[in-house]
Length: 112
Length: 110
Image (tube, rainbow over all chains, first blue to last red; front, side):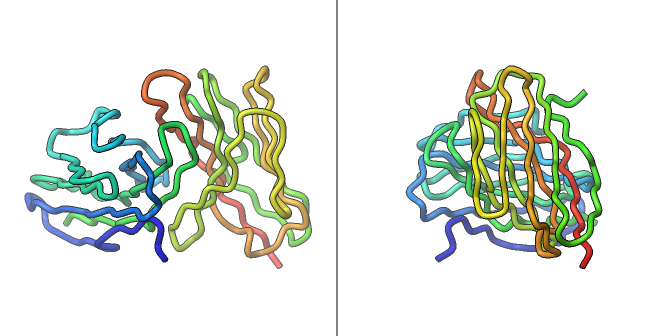
């Protein structure tokens, strides 16, 4: 059973388009996260939700909008995609804030 | 300067060698994590520790809170250990977000 799953695994799209990445966890965790890994493999937090409430919102363009319909899901919608948005996006979850995190397989987004 | 610094950035060794990867941090933390990212891209949590030492198989992680330093050791290294190892810290303030080091790329040659 996949603990943290993301769809799609690969996403190639053109500049200006709007796209969504979905994340689901079946671990019963309360906290979920979105991370961006750039071309140099550096990971950075984007957003975090705890019990469907937004608790971390880093300096991310407002073209990025997370949505948590329930505790098991955290989706990421990106409007007006730009070349600089090309990266690997990882979803993760943890039992609660500050606990060990379980990562999804990542979504490689390429904007052309 | 990044809040979490790892060294070395790249490490190549022969199978069987003892490996050490270092991590220093400059902020207040509640825990430190060691993560492994394989060439396929997936990230796995190896250790989460707030004091002392933890061991899992051939992997050992230590932390010195006073010196703000942690090490990850691999004994009897094997080519399958080749991966990027990432140190991350949970900040003690705010929403306890994770801040990551830049990673250490380890290559073990047969």
